[in-house]
Image (cartoon, rainbow, N blue to C red; front, top):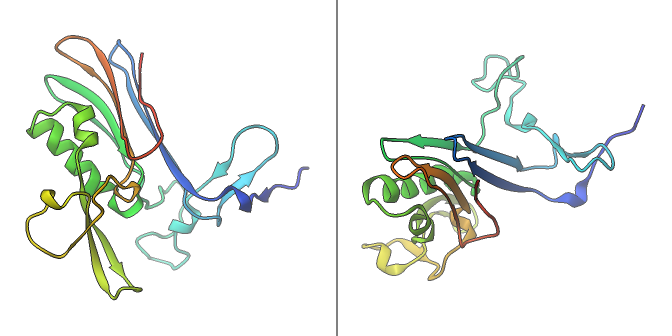
Length: 193
């Protein structure tokens, strides 16, 4: 029997990986350690840090997020596999509460504006960051002032990791060519093999 203890020094973070193969296989994986509770368990020199989403459950009976066998925890880790007649790709992002907002902006640029996946990842973003107790207001953030018409937005004037760090890997169904795109907001790589 081995004593397994939380590794508090490991911190918290989210990563997203995307891979595409020429045979049409597209995979996206998100791993997130968002709190030390129920996570950061290091079983010893095996190279894997265990994590779970136990904090996302409730012990209150009949709660919409009650702890039950075989239930998936409510969380913000999103992996999307998108396919139309021209393209198939996996896309995902870090960014906690802004993940869905970021993904919608990326998909809009690729699917409606016909931008390349790389150009879509490099484009400025905006997001509702939620209510700030410290500032006693809802924080609206934009990466470029020219991107937003109207007031109320705090402007970063540069790309920000607060807007998530996304990766994309996919295949063109027209040419059969695999592609990868990586977000300049952070570290990462997308593989197309």
